[in-house]
Picture 1 (cartoon, one colour):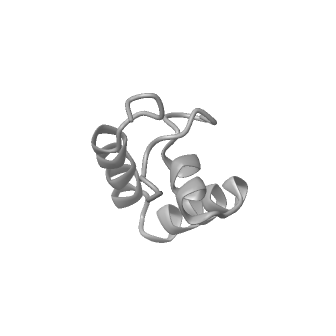
Picture 2: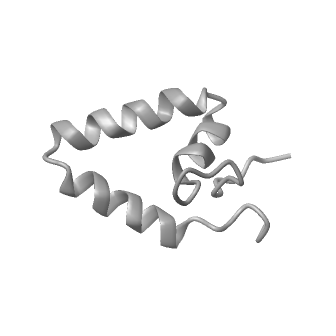
Length: 64
């Protein structure tokens, strides 16, 4: 069975970070912290833009 990247039902905002964590078998908190750190060190805007793109591109957890 192949894994599919999808947004999670474990949502803070849209479930993007939780979906990535589930796909990579990582702790959700670790992925969220890494995302925030990367966003801060890249001046914030690119991280927000990438999150919004993932939000619209990744299917929801109950769409697959």
